[in-house]
Amino acid sequence: MNISIVRPGELGDSERSRWRALQKADPSLDNPFLSVEFAVAMDRLRDYVRVAVVHDGDSIAGFFPYERHSFGIGKPLGGFLTTCHGLISAPELKIDTKALLRAAKLSVFDFDHMVAGQPTFAAFETDVRPAPIMDLTAGFDSWLEQVKANSPKNLKTVRYKERKLGREQGQLRFEYASPDPAVLRTLLNWKSDQYRRTGRVDRFAQPWIVELIDLMHAERSDDFAGVLTMLYAGDVPVAGHFGLRTATTLVGWFPAYDTEFARYSPGIVHHLQMAEHAAKAGLHAVDMGKGGKEYKDWLKSGVLYVAEGRVSRPSATAAVHWIGRTPVNKARTIVLARPSLYKVADRVLKGFGRVRTTLQSDSPPDTVVKEPSGAR
Image 1 (spheres, rainbow, N blue to C red):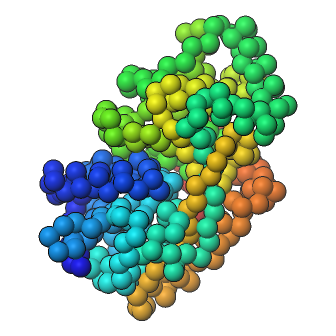
Image 2: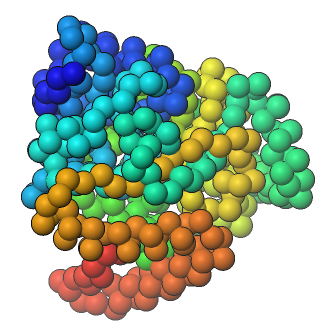
Image 3: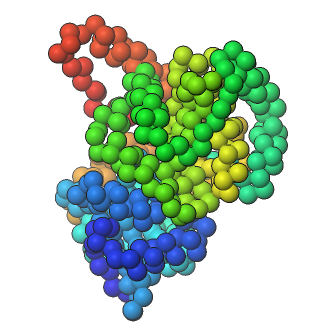
């Protein structure tokens, strides 16, 4: 095998077609973050994006998109923004991992949402976690029966709040795949407010991330698209979501709601309606991503598996990277895997968010309240 390194934007039409064909041939790769369109968009915005093209004789056997940072530090494409990464190839393909790193000029590659069980990386997996999905292959009604079985009380409560929202605030209307950029801005403003309230760093304070979302929102093809959904009460937007889809899978990315309507649980009401419209649109699954909120356990009707791990070549850079990153990764994994710890961490971050909001409101207009390093 021969490995060449290019930027995704340099791939020709035949190479992009080959990427799509390999992705469609393996159900475990049915995730838009593994699509060539996402790699090309990232390449337009960030200089460190690369793809290793694996040649087997005259044919292309696989593609490995990644980020190459200073000192040969390798990261998954999209890093903290994404919920899945891996090698796009036939399921049985196994590449010499150290040779792959040499060709990519990487000292180390750290992953935390790798498609589990890929032969090239399986030996380097240190932890495998479930990512809950809404399985819609048997239709919306079948999925809803599973949700009811998971917790009849929760479903009854949400349906009651849904009716109450419509009765008190105006007839409910759901818009699927909205093309309106103004609606997208409403959603992103809600999400920024949520980040600040809960003590997280506002991702949309980085202009390139907003530009990436705009690029994704403009994508409209059978195999890949950005999907903006919005729930309205009367003419007022109350909850929405922006995610990416392949031909059959929608991946959760940025859900948010207007806190003025929090008493109606609009986020969960929105998710129920989003599942119904996704099923009508012919999608087979909504991937909610690993870890996080309890509502995922209630809404799930299946799981996928993603892995954490690390590949390195002997070097001083790899050693320093291990010292700096491994304890942090292990701590994050432990917190996400234990609901009790996640709740404590969430409360601490929300407390910080309240303090930060107070400081910002009390500060003179030209005063900047800095984020603590490492805040997520």
